[in-house]
Image (cartoon, rainbow, N blue to C red):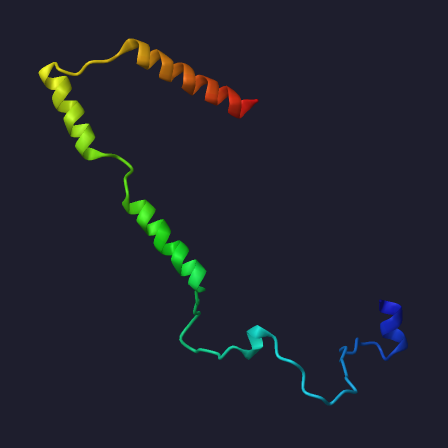
Length: 104
């Protein structure tokens, strides 16, 4: 680079770009957007707004049936809660086979 600088007077010249086409350039979406001086602005699409509402609904929902929890707690407390061992064993076996299916 030093050799080139010496050949052209010792200092680098700035590179400029010229165009021979005087037609106006098409603006990109960023250039065409109105500029604001108060900071950045984000505009969400309708689909993004719907997704945001769905996420908020999911966050608000606990997925726990509190009425059932209350009734099971009451049944345990008064001694009327009964566990069917055969049904429990069948559900555990089913759960394990489903887990094996995911890994296989």
